[in-house]
Image (tube, rainbow, N blue to C red):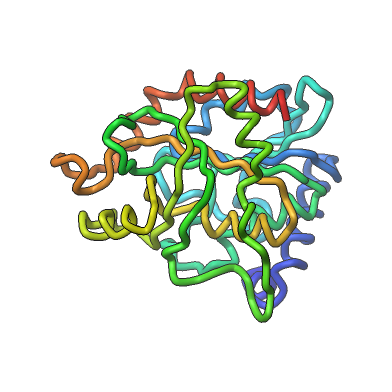
Length: 270
């Protein structure tokens, strides 16, 4: 499967989708969510869980290597009767597997007919007003990884990657949620204060190690896209405190009840 991911990622996604259908009986879904740090606890609030499959049992996927992430694909029947796929884990670029596995989940849900994708993450915040636990809706992103999931002359308009109508939906549900620009770094080292200042000069409000590459793949697949970031800490240099992954986990746990409620309201309105 690794060779197929590298040589024909679209076919690799179809293979993974077929496995999901074989394991769950579901051959079509409407909505998909990728739940990052702090967000996974909200999965069961979305509706009736019909099936659960460990990610590593699906071709092209791996078990998460980051503490605080889940490790399953959930098939959920929403109150509306529609079907949602929930990935409680993702592959990060810093794992060294290449960019194709990072976006494999996006391409797989697209192969199952998903038209709306919600990407979530935990991140560092550049705005001092956004303390740990703040949810920010992504209105744009900056890809600072030095790579892309696109190959060859695949010229895609990225001007409305983050679907404006979905941002409007979030603000109807909770007008207090701010919007921001997310910058993805390669990782796994946290950003230096100088790198954070650079990102701020470029227009970033949030920094992290996921999401932007997935957003590019989602745009390529023609998906409507919503991004939600949980600020787990102030970015390096914004606060004098050193960065610690345990802080990320703690912030996610503290925010879990609010995140679960917010996700359930947003998904119900999609």
